[in-house]
Every structure is written in structure tokens, then in C-alpha cells.
Length: 109
Image 1 (cartoon, rainbow, N blue to C red):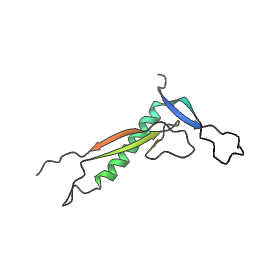
Image 2: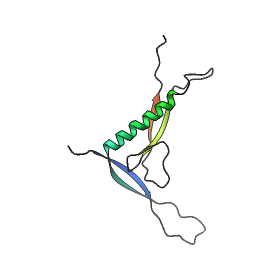
Image 3: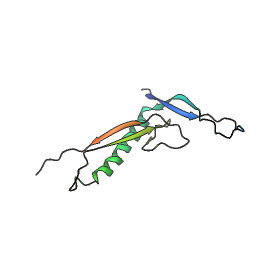
């Protein structure tokens, strides 16, 4: 059975020659598509969600004035299949993916 891959669009900064201008040159990015092993993305995403769920489970159910019903996070998947909450500077980064965690209602016992 052959390994499965998914395409990840990565943006790499193009290094340009320095100019004598007093204004900095705008950054230029080059988009490339890289194949990433699906198993690596699945493994890393599962671990990421497990860690986030651990953090969310530690939150109190409510306070006197409010309750946390859901949390939205923007994540990235890099060209190695690494899942990150905050993009890494200098690495290949894809567009952000938003995931929502909604608190399950617990039955009163």
C-alpha cells in the first residue's frame, strides 16, 4: 500500500539584493505546493487537539458573570506536517485554518 500525501501551499520569502533606497523594499513571497505525508499531518493534528483539549478542560465551567461556550483557534500546517498555533518566523507557512472547540453540556446528576 502506497503512502498518501496531501498538498500544502507554502509561502517562502524571496531574498532580494539590498538597494540604496531609504525605503525598504516590499517583501516578496513565492507560493509553492509541497506534498506532505497524510499520516504525519494526522499524527501531529491529533496531538495538537489533545493538548488544546487538556488546556480547555482545565478552564472553569463558568463564573458569576459569564461562561466559556466555545473557543476558536487559527492554526497552520507547515511543509513538514507540523501543526502550530502560531506560525513560525522564517518557516514555510500555509494559510491559517480555523478550528472551533465547543464545550459539551454535561448532564446534571
